[in-house]
Image (cartoon, rainbow, N blue to C red; front, side, top):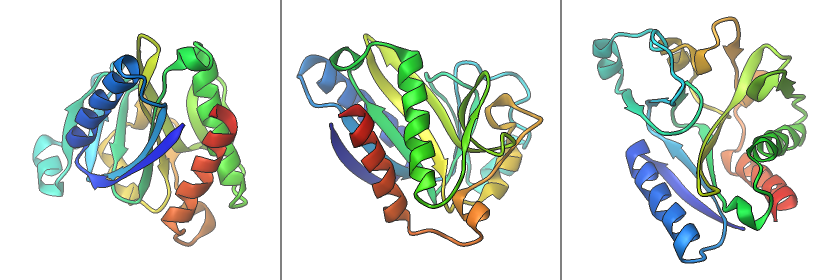
Length: 208
């Protein structure tokens, strides 16, 4: 596994680069790649998005500078914005374990163990994908796409990002729970590069 840092970029640019990378992994024997990046404000709508998931008007979203993009991952509506650590594990699961349930649970465990390095206790909620604080507030959303056992899309860990933008959607289609971030839990902003490094270490430990 190798790691690439794409910095801050528009979602569509990252999606195009993901498709190029999945093709290289499938056809050119490129190594499995964990991509890190941050996105400018954007709402992405997964394949399972229900009507009513976007609460803000298109005019308000435009005024806020928030794009809305329908994509091919699983899950529902998710917000991305700067200060959120987005990770795209572009992996050929035939090289390790062709099991999507195992893959999702292992991503969750990577995030849970990385959060523990900052003394943040997190876990899972039965029947829901992602990582949660106190089984009430989601701190990391996960949604993937898989074609011929090559994965794309991935996770979005709230680190220092503005959570106010999440009021524009029903996050992941769940009305009875909220969202939080590492900085909200700890009461202070975190060194973003350090968070990214800890997450990368967990992926190396569990996927290499």
